[in-house]
Image (cartoon, rainbow, N blue to C red):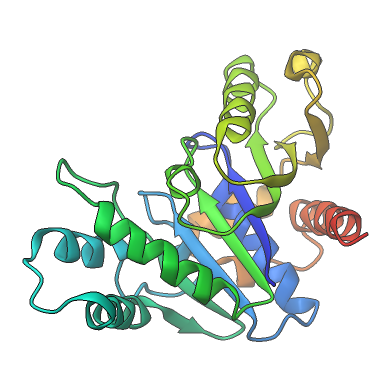
Length: 251
């Protein structure tokens, strides 16, 4: 069964960069071709951060499935849907990428979402790790289109609004119909948690990722996460958090 790691946080919190760092760290630790990266943020920036081009989005496939009058039924329709998703998977060196795309429109997506749930369960079982880059609202998780989550990392900077956002995300995680094995906050671009950390009640702090000019410089130069030096302070901090948490959830 796959180990599922979800990363969430408000826009600008650095969650996509951290999700990409996790993917790179797993590749360098020998996960091989057994990583599925899922871009569940409507902004769809994970592909660019990983240095690949998305082959398509699940939103496009779901839109067609929800609006087109079915010409086949049952298993045939499910196979057609699965084939479309398989075509949308971007195969890269060390990982596969699945891009969810924009949120649902005003139509009914019940049948399409049911097929998506069935396929995502099957797809996830083929990988050792599933890394999900979520938006703050975690629509992908709240609609139960993935397996239970082993590790939820909530990215936040040391600002008052980020503390409030982190608290709301933890509350939302508690309300989801899926189980989250362990969740905690990763304070980004800082060496220590903010004074208001206590407002998060019993939510753990997983660690801090320091401000790193090399990360900003790489982004400004149009480089991807694999162009970042291995001694990047931010990357090393993410690697430490990942190693610590994976060790805990496996025991």
